[in-house]
Length: 366
Ligand SMILES: *Cc1c(COP(=O)(O)O)cnc(C)c1O
Image (cartoon, rainbow, N blue to C red; front, side, top):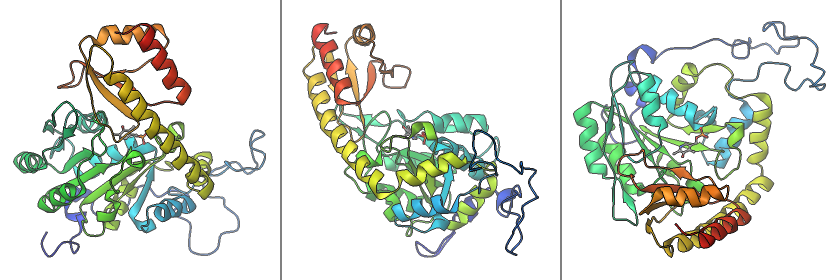
């Protein structure tokens, strides 16, 4: 691809056999242009279920519910043609791998320690994973974007997955570095920036970079700050040429009717105001719990976090797990991840939960 930034299309990075793929023609997408009155084309029940008397869920949903897509687009100050809604970001990660990487070929780059689903999706598609480990100074983690660029070129990768803020690092990748990396790889790979924890971060969303960088994809989710992990709603924001193919590759009807309604409510003004206030409370509690942990004997590092969790390194993770476990408190053991042989990740919960954590640690320090 050539030409000035913004003039290119990510279509050249899509698997050649999928560039004009039209996917499954569903009962909703195949409806003719004439205003339909009577729908007898999808073998749905004519009458509603007794447990759904209004018949809200009687019919197959719109594969990309228009009102929900529009609400997401409004929320991110972009256009509906740049939005793909899916069953959480997990589905979108998998969809990106399947759309951009040939089965058993191409490759993805990840930066450990990071979210496990990037490598899982690549593995299930037979795609090689190149790891460019992050470095840390026991306070923050850093992605070496220049090393990422070199590794992506050397491996012939089609996707670079970056999480910002990262899980479990809690660190953001500076936007200017995301932009530079995307630009440098534009003729070879898509950069996917996973902003699952974006609501907790001070840095602006990379959504602002999308127009200028056609090969950038931003993932957002309702699972974290919006408190709807059980609803399974996530979105990919990307260039319209790419979202068109992603929708064609996606399995039919990804968003159940009740979930779509829940998502619409979550993006309404009232719910967004409540979300902002919950986020504020979480940030306050995160500072408190970070201080508490830093003061604890046996805790060697508490990383700065731009997310709703803290990552700690300790002398004796088993003892800490045992102390918390005895109080019925479950945290995430991160010791299986490269570079984290001594680390635990603690989610910032409610004020009550954090005071229970405080009590457990004071009564029985690790
Ligand atoms: C939790 C998390 C997600 C969430 O995925 P959903 O499928 O939307 O629930 C995505 N990415 C990262 C880095 C996460 O930590």
